[in-house]
Every structure is written in structure tokens, then in C-alpha cells.
Length: 488
Image (cartoon, rainbow, N blue to C red; front, side, top):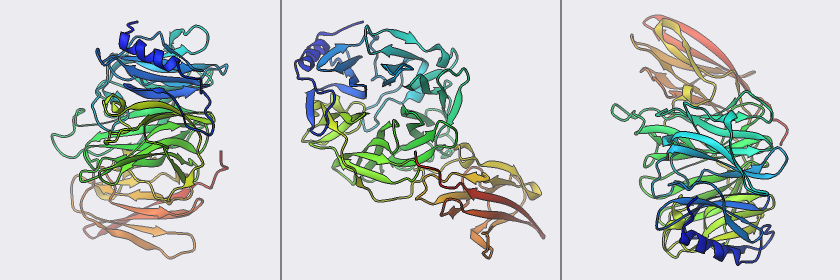
């Protein structure tokens, strides 16, 4: 493996510092960290990508108990999608992809490269104890598709798989000892914004970051192009139970076309609430905070990042390891290239987990016009009267997040004829009432209307009333919101 003089010089600076692998209450500066990115940690092993400013290539380095080494992994042209976690015996390992064609990496706020643009990727694991040994994880690597952004926990592996030029990837999970992969779902899928804007380069989705825990996976879903809001890229923080069920939208972000941005990143699913890094700006000056989101209730917490802004963060038990920039000028955080900016003055910091203050409650919704039937929500198009198709809601919608209302969407589409469609709602023990306005035009992908189930355990019946000429026909669907589960 190539080891440049500049990389090795910076490592000597790291090794000279006192050990602080398990920072508890105080914020401890572990080392200067210029040209660093993609931090991850487990068991006191802090792994990050470090760039050689002369060659532009990135090495995978590890800090542990005051000793730093370059891990025996081939350097690459983008920061690694590395994630540290325990193997089946509880020993710390790190998993990552290696690709025949690296993903697109652009300056700015995006916390990672666009992994959906990578080609020929497979998953590898490197032990972090004893002599580091790399091995290919053949059980989750395929010959015809790409696997990226892996995460491991106690012998289980979660990862993202996509075919070349695929618009939407799959989040998959191989349980410990299992031979068959399970789907963990995905995220919102935006509609096409018009002719000439529907190709892969103009519209696709992917996963920036993924973390596997004992009972859930959490990930940052990226939507690029199409009918997204803002400047063309939006993000969703999602959590999904490993036991089955749909993913829950916990936070979202975008870059405003006018002023400001919001961006959730660096999720940690080792426990509930899900911990993550929240960055944003009302307009000109950005700020970051350590944040939490309860995957059952949706309750949020937040604590400011002390002494500066965070360009990346990794939770490890009672410690948070993070890349802090103390720049006096505004550096785009948590961008993958934040610490390569000369004025960023990044440093590696160890902090204790803070006391989170309750954050204002807010209903989460996709930052795009989405294709309801393709967004993993359980909706599907079914045959309706007189050549129409009706958007059928799932018979059961999740309770989580329990302290937010659950939205139920309705729509109709057709290719010929003139129709009017209204939706009648009937709750138990209450009079029926029509929802919203009458639909007179076909809606091929998105929702024409919506209703809410405010409480977990609520039930209702929605009836499509379809009028074609003098004919009026009705189709009814029952929907129930799941009861509140036990917190985990």
C-alpha cells in the first residue's frame, strides 16, 4: 500500500498525543485532523479516511489508545464508506466497499460521495485487533451488482445494493448465521419533473450512510433530481426494525434555493433513540448539534457541538468522536471535503455523550413530490370503476412515530374518459364526510389528497366515489393504525 510522506507525518503527530479513547465528560482534543473525513468508531478504535494533499488519494487510518497506524487497505480516490462495529465474537472490525469505478464526489454539503454512481463494488472486512487482516464478504457481494455503505453488528451485515444506472437501490440485511438476504426497504422515491429530466444522471436515489445496531438499522437516504425541493438534492434520516416492518422517517433536510439548509447525517443505531449529527443554517451562518430521534415516538433531542462545528461524528458507547472545525469563516459542514479546506483547521475530538435537551416536535414529510406506490409505504394501484385505477392504502399503517400523525394518501388515475373522484371518510361512531376537493384530472404517480390518523390504534374507512357520466360507483378500503408497541 502506498504511504505518502505527508500522511505519515500527520500520523506521527497523532501518536505523540496522550491517549483519550474513552472521553467521558470533558472534550479532549486528540489530534489535529486536516484532510480527514468519514469518521467511525467502535470499542475505542477510531477509523477515518485521510487524504494525501499531493496525490489526492485517501488512506484508511486508525487511532486507538494514543497509537495511530495506517490500515493495510489499498488507498482510493474518495473517502471510504467504512463502518466499525463488533464481529460475531464482539471483536472490533471495520467493513467497507472496494469499487472498480469510484462514486462521484463533489464539494459542498453532501457528507459522502454519491454511492449510487459507483460501479463494480464489493464488501470487505478488516479486523482491528491483532494483525489487521482483510477478507471479502462473499455472502453479501455479487458479481453483477454493486454493494456499498456496509455496516456490521455481531455477525450481521447490512448494506446497500444497486445495479448500474438503477434509479433506486435496495437496503439489505444478512442476519448472523443466515444464508438468505432480507430487504430492509428504502426511502421516498421522487417523481419525474418532466421530459428530458428523467434519466439516471438527472434523477436517482441512494444511501449516503448506514449503521446497523442490535434491533434496528438507521440510514441517510439521498434523493437527487426529479421533483425534489430546493436546489436538487434532499436527505432523509430513516430507521427500520430488523424484525420486519417499514422504515420510519425521523428527520429530513435540503439545500434551499433561496437561503439556508438542513442535513441529518452520521446515524448511530446501537440503541434507541437513534443518535445523529444535525447541521443547518437559517441563512448565512451554519451550526451543528448532536441530536437524537426516538424511532418509536419520534421525540427529538439536541445538544450543541461544543467549541465549533462538526464535520463528522461517530458514537462509541459513552463517547462521541468527532471532527471539529474551528474556522472563523463558514466551512460547508458536514461535507465530505470539509476538512480539506485550508481554513477548516479540523481536529479530532473525543467528547462524552451530552445531556440532550428536548427539541421542538415537528411532523416529518419527504422534501419532494414522491411516487407514493414506489416509496415503500405499502400503497399499490388497483383496478377501479370505468377504466380508472385507484391508489389503495395499506390495510395497516405503522404506529411509529407515535407522537406524530400518520398520513393516509389517496389518488386516482386513468388514460381515457372523463371522471370525477371524491373520497369519503367514515370513522367508527362518527358521521361520514368528504375529504378535500374533487379530483377531475388523472394523477399518474403522486397523491391527490390525504387524511390523517392522529392516534395509534385509530381506524377508518375510505371510500372512493367515482362518477363517470351518470354512473356513480364506490370502492371502500379499511385502514388501521398499529397500536403503540413497547419501547425498545
